Image (cartoon, rainbow, N blue to C red; front, side, top):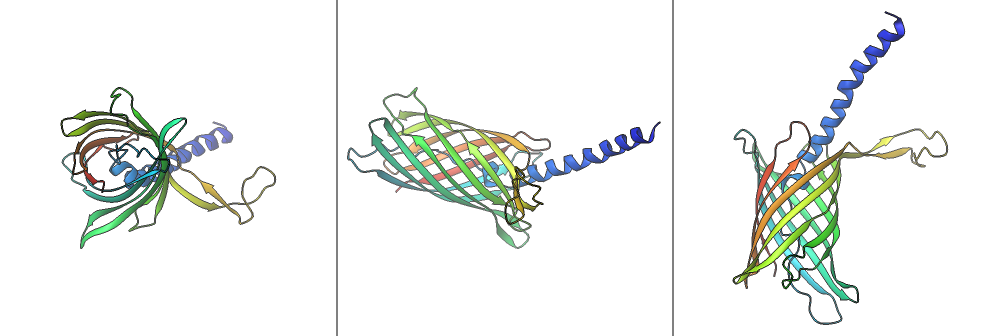
Length: 255
C-alpha cells in the first residue's frame, strides 16, 4: 500500500471521532438547555386585545417541571419564567409581539442549583375564538446558555409554533405543535484574518455555530376562567443520537 493511501486512511480514522466529538458537544449543550427541557406552553395569553387604538399588554408567570423519559431516570428540571405579550390591532389584522426570559434549576448534591438561562423574542397572531380551525401562528428567536455549573455552552434556536384553540365550558383548550431548528455550542473562537471574505473581524475572533439540530414539541393546554390559570402537558424530542424525549408539566398565570 502506498504511503499516501495509508495517510488518507489514518486521517479518516482521526477525523471521524473528532467530528463525532464536536457533534456530542453540540448535542450536550442543547440537551441541557431550557429550549429542550420545557417548551413554553401555552404560546399565547389568548386574551382578545382591547377595542382601543392603543396596544394591549399582558404578562404571564409560568413554572414547569420536566422529566427525562429514559429507562426510569428522573433527571428533573424546574423552570420558572416571565413573558410579556403586546397585542396590537391594525389595518392588517391582529398580531402580538412577545418577549420572555426563563431560568432552570437542576437537582445537585447540596440541593437545587441554577443550570440554564433563556431569553426569547418573537411574534404571534392573536387567537380568534370564533374560528377554532384557524391556528395561532408564531415565530421565536431563542438565545440561551446551559450547563452553568460548568463551562457555559450557548445555543440559538428558531421556533415556529402553531396552536389550535377552542372554547370549552368556562375556559378554553389548546393543542400545540412546535417545530424548532437549533444550533448548540455557539461560541467565539480565535481566528486569523486571511483577507477579504474571511469574516474574522478586527478583534481576531469569529462566531462559530455547532451542528444544526431539529426539535419537535407537542402538547395540550387547559385554560381556566376567570382565574386565568392554565395547565399544560408537553413532550419534546431532540433528533440526535442518544437523546431521549422530555415530558413537562406546566402551570402559568396571567394577571
